[in-house]
Amino acid sequence: MSTWADIFFSSNPPKFINEVEDSQQFRSFSPVTSEWHLGKLVDESRPVDANKIQVFWLRSNRRRDSVAKVFPDYTSEQAAEQMRRLRFPESQIQSHEDDAWFEFDNFHREARAYTHIERFCPSNEQIYFPHFRGVLTELERSKFSSGYAHSRALVLEAIKPESRCRRIPATNCNRMPDSFQRGLPLTRFEREWYWSLLCDRLRRLAALHSIGITRGDLQDHHFRIPGDFYDTVLFDFSASYTFTPRRPFRLKESITMQILEGSYSMQNAFSEVAFSATGQEFAYRAEALERRPALAVQDRCFFLAARVPAAPLMTLVVVNLLYVLCGVVFALVALVAARGGVPDIQRRLTIAGLVADRFEEQRQVESTEEMFEEYAGKESRRVAVAPAPKGGYEY
Image 1 (cartoon, rainbow, N blue to C red):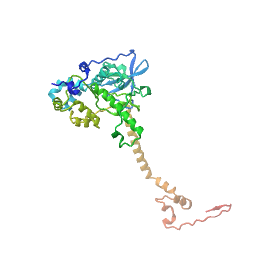
Image 2: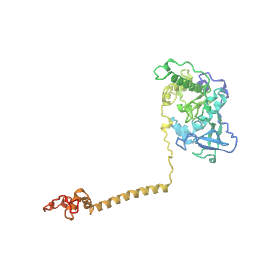
Image 3: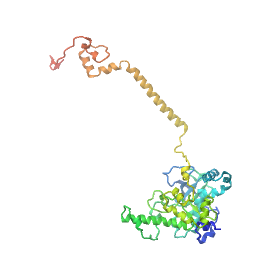
Image 4: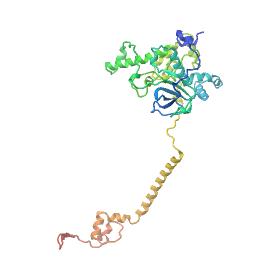
């Protein structure tokens, strides 16, 4: 009967395989001084959510040489919900809760991956990843100055968007294949740059695969820190799988039987991701996962965009309603006033009204035409301009 190590490594497990354990005991973070706290969020452009991972600057001795990746608690309800998505029978959910906690809890996934890298990754390849400085499992609220407080965190070295933080591998790339050069509207320099970038990223992934870590949900921004243009380190292992002697309980039995019969290679299944545009396409090709949308698509997450006290908010609403009410009242007053002498004033301020005021008799009228005598059947006056006795002209 083949072991899980033989299945995972295609019957060629590495030498360190006997040293791998299922233990969830991770190295604790040991600060230089007790006077440390968590500062601002590293990426302040992202919305803050109590149910999401948060990354803070860890300040010690007025320096920011570490970051703390704070994880929300993983609850029994979340474990049960994820097992229901995998179509586990209700009668088996409770008995598999520890397995779900072992495989689905993002904190343990990432801590297990960094511990594995620290123990088994060659020293010349550890520069591909942030340096792991330990875990915190009893974080107090007093250590937080912003964000949401949780008790668990990973402490990593702080990689900043500076030239001294860039890590350029010394290994040369292989010759660029002809297929990479054809059909791309790029200059020779651009093609060489993209080819070197691809080789560098594949080299980082190969370093992970060689020690038994498969990277899930791989995206472009996982190779560089926020605000930087260059690749620095490969980080964020919260969706990764790190090999342990324990067989993953969510692996489909059909694919396991194919592996045991020698008709399928787990290594080939994981290599399919290199030719898949999405995680769902990878699942279709490898047939090792059920055809379901990603958890992020199935979950509905709500976060508080702004917190406003009730009293000022209600005051603002009432004032706006009063503003509308005053507008309605003033409109009614204007309508009532317009039914009186306002129309007559408007008529007398027109050109015709000014002419009638100057040359016709003054009387109350209902229209502009009534200002003139011929409208009433009387003879109209004739107006002429003649020299005035004292000089000038007059009507």
